[in-house]
Length: 460
Image 1 (cartoon, helix red, strand yellow):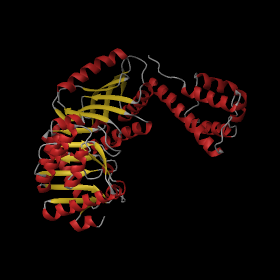
Image 2 (spheres, helix red, strand yellow; image 1 turned 180 degrees about the horizontal axis):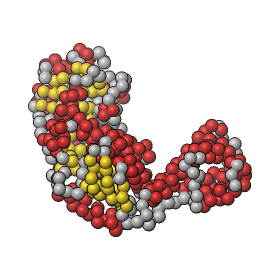
Image 3 (cartoon, helix red, strand yellow; image 1 turned 120 degrees about the vertical axis):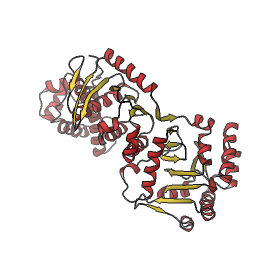
Image 4 (cartoon, helix red, strand yellow; image 1 turned 90 degrees about the vertical axis):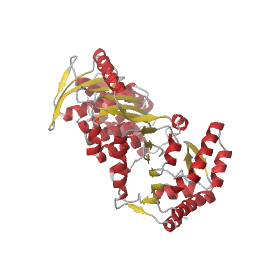
């Protein structure tokens, strides 16, 4: 069995003791423990028990907070918080390693409950984070959303909270399931893309005859044998040679299957005119979790073009300007915006166009919204809906990325934190249809209100 544990808890404990000038015997007296326990915790041969860990770590933090190191001017509460947080993080890391290793004692092991699979996956995720630079790869030849249900979103959120930087997620699902439960799949996809800072998610068509294989980095492989009416049986391994074989088969299946959703690079989207074609379409469904980067007045577009960083971007903006002025303004469009985002836009003037950030003056942002109001007056098919996000929203809209749908394609952009390259695209009519239904369902919710042209002007 490979060993990855770095005795982080022992190192953290020793470091804090040295800073405070405390001996093992002094800490042992403060905790009412024998000195041998402290020695074992420091050298990594033992960890505090899970049952007593929170209490012991709290007592340690109390003791260290009362013995500040040289130059430590923080107040006692901040010293306690800093000490406890450092010890807890190190303890959780080492504990996760031991839990993960305890799942298996031979080349192939057996599990027989969804809870066991979820726990195993969580431990593998946490261990993968410890062994990498914050990147995780997950491959599955079957529908992870269904197998894990709501737990999969929770696992992704835990990864985010643990500091994951990049996730590569590849999975398969039956296309007919998209039509039968469009809301379930659209909500899961949007939640995962929106919650993580960077994810490359690929979804392919699942075939009934293919094996159900899951591979997490080079740490774990699982084959689900059956999953019926809440009963699950699977075999798994943490042996490198076995994982390599499962990985090769899993990758082969995913690479040769029909695509449903793929990550896309911004420059690729510009070269293939995907964004321009979308804005040219006669029917568009748009959800902006950002300022509305569309239908700018002519003078603002001219400024963007003049300030373009290179000829390629200037050329893109010229085409975009023509499309806005000649086609988009006449199209049938349902545009959904957050009320808080409009206020933020009026306040800071930050907007991203073609994945490039621009800074507008207060006068220009007001001019932009006034122009949108004019388009609404001249084109009754251009509708703006407002989500008042100060009210409690459904889970899938809390971290929802921007959504762009036209007659032919689906385009998802996670731009909550500014311009980035976290894009996903689908040209598959089944995936596009699922998101269109999701979008139109959103329009009918109580928190989504259609604005008049005059309503939009009230923000000015």
